[in-house]
Image 1 (cartoon, rainbow, N blue to C red):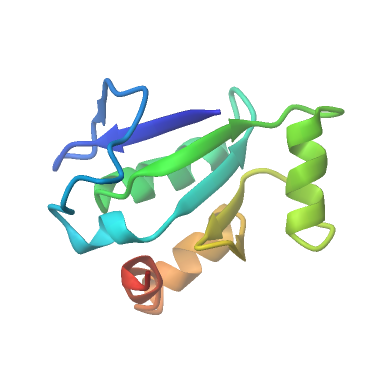
Image 2 (image 1 turned 60 degrees about the vertical axis):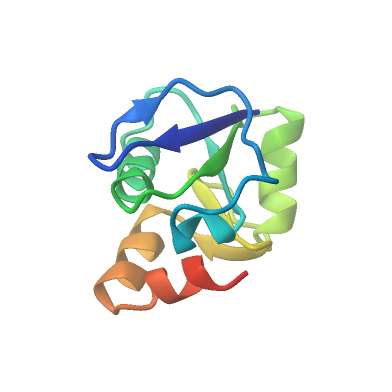
Length: 115
């Protein structure tokens, strides 16, 4: 499990833990975002880039085939077996295409602000 933090330009900042007690400098910090990924997955990279551009902190789980993390992702997502699998405040959002569809519809920011 890795926790990632991004700067305003969407670049990954070096950070191994997040101080959850610190005041949020951005409303998007309020949502708990989790993403299950695999290395070299272009859809995973695309989803993480979108979240990074929005300044969202997220927890990333490496979930290769056959791993416990992959089993958790499948279970939590209602049986979806692809990556990425994205969760906002514990609710399954879906994959990369679903995340971008929410953004195009103007619903992603609202979900990210809901604590």
